[in-house]
Each structure stands twice: as C-alpha cells, then as structure tokens.
Image (cartoon, rainbow, N blue to C red):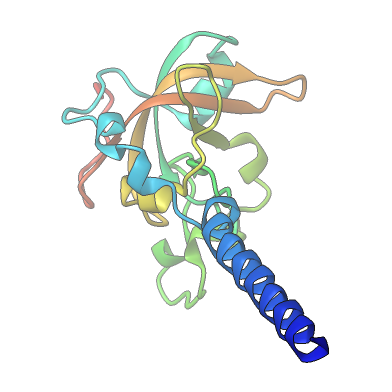
Length: 189
C-alpha cells in the first residue's frame, strides 16, 4: 500500500510538471517580447505606391508644422547607432541636407547612419516616425520587419504631426513611400 501511494504521488508530480511545462511553452510565445507580430499585421497597407506630393524636409516640418496637422516629409532613416524603437513600428529620420558618414569620402564608420559627423545639427534635423493603429496606439512590431526597411533608406512619410513642449516632431504615420536609391530631391516633391 505504501509503495502504491508513493507511485501515485510520483505520477501526479510528473503530470503536474509536464502540464506546467506545456503551459509555459504555449504562453511564452504570446508574451515573449521578441516574438514577431508582423505576421498578424499587414504592412502592405502602410506602403504607398506613389510618393506623396509636396513633401517637406525634416527641418522645414520641425519649424512649420503644427500639432495635429497633416504632414508629408522626406528624410533618411538614421540619427543614432540604432534609429529603431525595439518592438514597435517606429524609427527616426534625418533631414537629407545632413551627411551620413558613408557620404564622406574616405570615412570608414561602421554605423554611418548615426551621423556622428553631424551631431551638432541632429537635434534640429531629426523627426520620429511612429506607425499607429486606428486608436492611435503604436503598432507592436518592428518597423524593419513590417515595412522591409533598413538604415539610410530615403523615405517619404505621410501622417499627423505631434509636437511636444521641446519642439520635437513625431509623425503619427499612416503611409510610407520608399524612394529608390539615387533618386534626386527636387523642390516640387
């Protein structure tokens, strides 16, 4: 009888441990911050097939756009060693008048998108881009994965301006157009 009770206790413990392990493995993918939500969000609905007309520069948008106004601005992805907001469809863009390290002949910087040669100009030449849902909440997916983006790409972003007390500009983005590399910037775009 004593052996039988011991076997029942051991079997019950094994079932309990196995059940917890199975529960843990199924819930961890849903709560894992590194788990991708890109498969559940259709990034193509944010990609524009045509470049928005009359896009302004980042510097001009920072100077002139009012909080809540519709904006379209053009810039290059960068501004820091990691211009991405981890786990969110958000990133910083830099005005095209600034030179990335890769634009400087002979510069061999490993992270040219950080604009380390232009740090004194960065605060007034950068904007944050955030893709949001219908309720205005940031999308919980990496922008690189959702929109197939990388550092130093030139993008035109359409959305609503969001200003803070310090004069920083965030674009609550509803659309993005990726320019082909080498396409010149003209005043009518």
